[in-house]
Length: 159
Image (cartoon, rainbow, N blue to C red):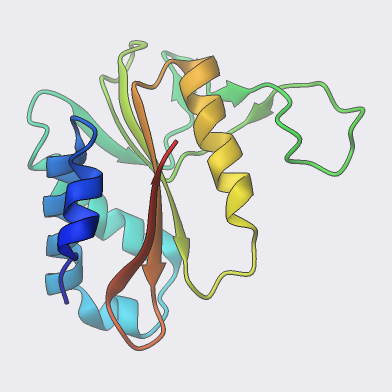
């Protein structure tokens, strides 16, 4: 399967979009078996990150990287947790990031969700907005991957 022309055009509306489109295409082409069996999200994002790294030779692509410089990566209260009195920052583990380790150069953050997930995508979108506002990411993208027998991208949304 491949990305649709509309998906490619949408991705290209932001500078890292071409690299993301190529890496997603490689994921769909090379890992149909992984997607088709509803594999763990971490397995899917790891494979995607391998493809994405090729397009960012001067930066590092990491999965679930929880550092902001050398400190744990934290987001302030985003109404993601049921306790509205909790104002403490929460340690976060973005699915995939493109950055320069040990610095605050944060180029791109992606949150993935499988189409079989029952978790509201708005949670991921709030996190993505938080990554941009609080951690200085230049670009943030939500990706929903179809994992029900077909290797497809079911949703894309720049935050």
